[in-house]
Amino acid sequence: MQPAQILHPRPEGLYAPAADLYIDPTRPVARALITHGHSDHARAGHGAVLATKETLAIMGARCGPGFAGSTQALAYGEEITIGGVRFSLRPAGHVLGSAQALAECGGTRVAASGDYKRHPDPTCPPFEIMPCDVFITEATFALPVFTHPSADHEVMKLLDSVALFPERAHIVGAYALGKAQRVMATLRACGWDKPIYAHGALLAVTELYREFGVDLGDVRPVQDAPKSFYAGAIVLAPPSALQTPWVRRFPDPATCFASGWMRIRARARQRGVELPLVISDHADWPDLQRTILETGAGEIWITHGEADALAHWCAQQGLNAKALHLVGYGDEEAEGAAA
Image 1 (cartoon, one colour):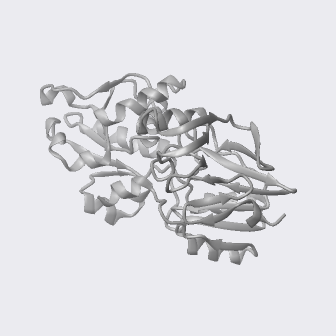
Image 2: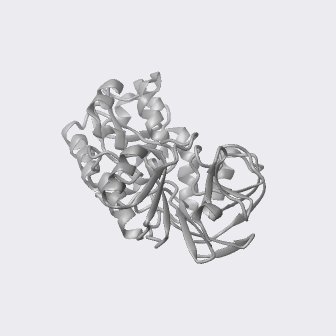
Image 3: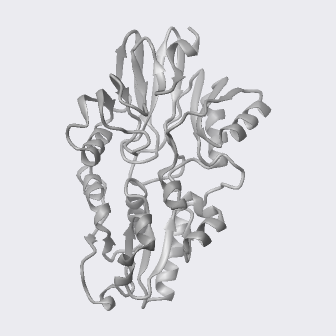
């Protein structure tokens, strides 16, 4: 069977015609498979939604309990056949509950990565390679400049700054779903055993992580207190909060931003970020390359991001690659970095 008969791009997203199912559709459809809970992939209003139980819980928390007409949870490795197409999910390593989608029919395997990363993350299962004939990948950081250091390395920079300036509060901008919880967990792994303070916008998702067994230690909401109370504290907040009067409650706040886009110094300067932390939940340039090769796929479709650059590299490797230029997907942390 030709891959395009199993999955092909439409304005709504990747479409499986035999199953009448879309993967991460950008507008309401009758049946959707959702790879993860970020809002550029998980939208409300679908008739039926298939996803991991974690992603369904995240969608319920963010979109409200009536976000879809019906829902069905699919565990990693579990299979379901719809219209003769066998679907299964595998870990994507992006955020809690994130999954790659594998569609199989007539001996042809098409794998859609969704958003993914290969770096270790204590808050979600690691990315799992799926051998396939066609690999559909993102390309958010598909340029050679993007080679991400380890999260531990970046968090140690933060801890070194806290030790150097104990009279200051360090305010870390981190996206509410995934990035904030990864920073919290990495702080614990690097030896920070004091309370971590969190902006109210981060609390609901953080509590959801706890409910799914992710240990983040003592996380407390930011409350009104004398400035001196937060001396030496680490505070996490959504990136949009860094340039608001909210930060004035802290003593001489040192602004930090955890994002893969902090590799670009101009982005940090534009936002007035004092301590850029290059921590990304997307695959960097080397990991995009090795993932493509490890899947063994002869054909590569690229959904969004620096698609043309990655397609050019694939062509140099003798792989048949094409940029789909799907509209409606992007990196929510990029939006925060550009705000």
